[in-house]
Image (cartoon, rainbow, N blue to C red; front, side):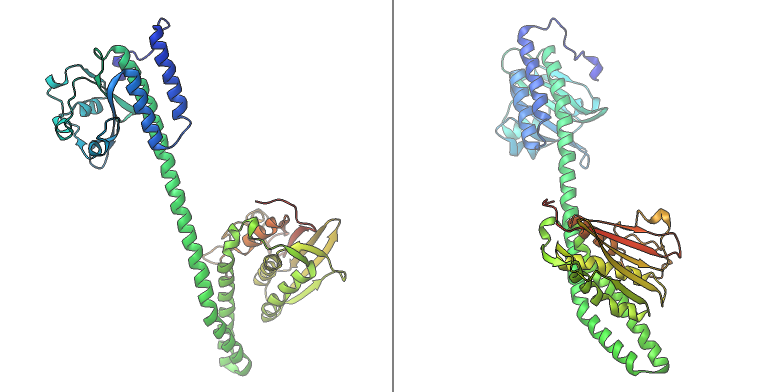
Length: 424
């Protein structure tokens, strides 16, 4: 065990030893400044070989799946061959160090029955002296650090102290590097999965729009010409198709949740132009539910710098949201007002309203006010998230107000009349 030997350094440490302690401090600084595994391993090996004045240094790490030690790195020229050779936990010096969690100092290795001959035989390498210590993370032994063949004389108690300190630094540095590498790999996998998800949704929404357009066309035709029970069935088909179109619109626009500033196509426009696009997209849906949809716009054009298509999507989503959550024959009112260097657009409805405790959550991705098992309204719950993101990219702010359930709701969008000169 570690407490079998005093690893501290006294105040009367000889001057030659102080130089080595300084190198340990330098090693610590180097290991803490990099997370590249190869650099870490090479630095450990070189420093240990220099401080202990030995011919070779090896790092063996425990392989949990195979329950054996494997060479992770070595100063020897046969590094690749060495990495292929497993070291058993039983009947080996490294295995003894690992399983018994203690150091071994052997100045005549050939006389020790625990010496594992396979490594020397396969690499034609003779081990005369060995100093090995366990590598630990807290109370868990993770591997073994070995120093082989002292160049002059024998390994000393001071060498043991040095190697223990190096092993402790090495174990921590290697563990941290592994964690960072695992995190990077996980991030790459998540990013790739996210890209695949978005690509699939883009393709799916595009491919489904054509047959859906045909369904909508025939359903509208049947609704106009049919009567009685057939007309009722046509209405069901039309409503279902409109609901599906809303879901496809959400799927197509989900990428906007991740859009950066560089993806905006800013150009001179007007608030009236943006609202006109939203109006043309919303009127038919409002008429299908017999809503009274009104617009209050100033007669004078309000100039704006914006991505017309993306910004109009904000108001398409807000109007769609109001239509969706307002019972048939409801009222929806959009109003535009100018205040100093800002414009405020509000969309008010007399629908189902929003509970006060949920007002701060509705702009989150995939959030639904209604329970997903009992809700009556369709959609993926990303329309408000998309609207929020687009407004943010235009330097504006969006929020909602409601007196509560069945009290209707009002959504506000505040936009600067000049887009701020900044980039994400």
